[in-house]
Image 1: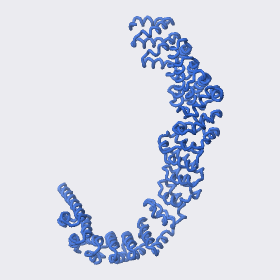
Image 2 (image 1 turned 90 degrees about the vertical axis):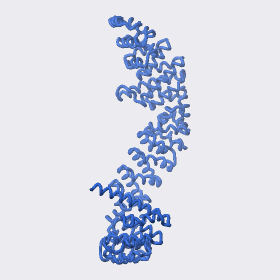
Image 3 (image 1 turned 30 degrees about the vertical axis):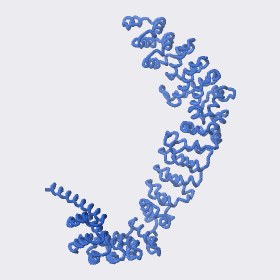
Image 4 (image 1 turned 60 degrees about the horizontal axis):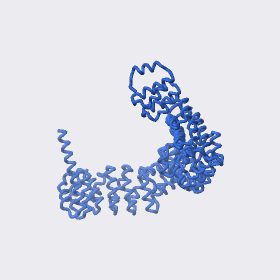
Length: 627
């Protein structure tokens, strides 16, 4: 047929069914340029017989023309009904295709009527169409009218599925049962009657599919089927199969049905339920809505408490606040020590409300690990949680803090100590008592606590006494802490005495404190005595301190130390050079880097020399820029 404008103008002026039927009959022989115009003409006029002709030849059209027809599906209802009753099976096949692809659920009954046919190709297409409709309605919320139309469409579809199940003995199409699974739980009387009738072919086949977990759609609907008394036993048998655990994700989409006692009973009959327990990998894959169902699901499984607690662990750290809160509530209801152990981790939740609820529960339960937990929570980023922890921890007092000090991280130590200092009026007295303990380990620990909490000034006398302690660790720690107690005649005198201690660590730390307090001039003679001392650390520190004095011979002492026979003294001397950037001894440093007998001295000297060279070069560039 030629594309003749005069011809179409003539046709446009003759609106008669016979003309449109003739146009429809011409579609097979028309080329692809002409077909769209013919189809548009027929669709515009809407004569039923011609529309049936368009449906008859639907499979001949290109995709874009088929889409045009599908867009007009609402005006094709009568034609589709007529085509679905046509004696020509090919016409009925085309009608099934149009109904399926247009998502015309209102015409689903036409698909179910095709299942009465004896043609396998037609029944297969009709059953597949019903399944596709169920998928679109349940999973994808098909495009079209707003969500308020969904219940009406569900009624249409369930009615069609009820008819399809009634004729199951004729067609035996599993797609029909899969579609039923998609829409469960359903309230259609005919559909439920078929599922409940033990003599029904649909009931027998569905029972077999449920027991064998044969289709993903059936597996996903297990909980919905459990609500049908005649199918609950089959559901229990199916859930016992290990492969049912592979479908836990879609099963959880209906976990809200666990509110039904019959559904819970069917689930609890699965006494070996390890394969139904979620793991970390599954929790990471689940959508938020399904993660929120996990606590309810796990709660109703027949399993040991320990297994349920283990299954809840990944939920307590998942990304969804609601899911974590539900997991917490489930664990709280268990009233078990193992559950409390997991709840303790939730006291560090990013959500303040969850952390607060978890802590209150553990406080009410008097959980055995509470003291240790409180110490850590004092530094919680949630102000109300930290305040609760402080208030609960303070009555436990200094003893608990002292016992757990070594195991605490520095930020936790500082937060817990700050809380006790603020709330416990006897804190400083108790720590001072520890500084006079008979045990050297206690004295050392007390000094370390005072230093880390910045409380040295409260213990000036104790620290001065401890600088001459027989235990070198205690004395050296006290000497180091003395640098923060402030200038006083007593402190200077104590530090000067510490410079004569037999242990080099004590002498070295005392020098550092003297320099920190800026009292080098008051201890000049004592420091001079260390310039030729036997301890490399105190000797190096003394040289460094005196180097800032206008007199004192520190530079000469450094030169002698760089030539000392002991390699550890030469290394300490290099440390002084590195700290102060002393270019005056660069030649000696270069010499040590090249010819020293000790490999470590050479390595350290080379490092210091390179650093001095870099500093010298940077200084030269700065001077040039300034000039």
